Length: 157
Image (cartoon, rainbow, N blue to C red):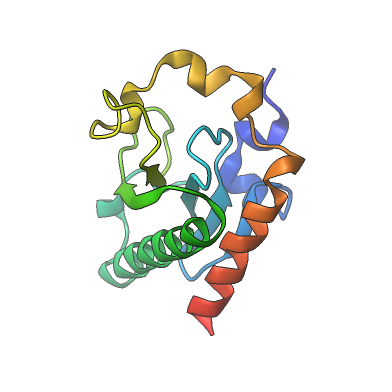
């Protein structure tokens, strides 16, 4: 059963009840991903639950959201380069196919990924990677959470 904050990620972030939120940014919330089979996976959530797509934002808000996505991507890159082995790059995606609110995915990619998957979209990883308990976000990810948060703070200062 999904916890209440997962059923309303944006609303729970606005209420300060979303435990995945790392920082409040200009146009949204930086959050660490529910699954961590690629350590450092993060998500930028819109701060308006009624917004379904990027094109629904005003031009200035759209640019602020994209700037936040860039900032979160750079923070994940810096943190993963520092605390994870084999960091390769970051992929940024705005898809919106499964969740009906504007959000952006920040996927760190690694040299140690399987050869047949390393050059493909993350969404082609086997389904069990998304549901296995060992990849679920938990207390053992606290140092990574702190590293991404600290990088966000440096980039904001």
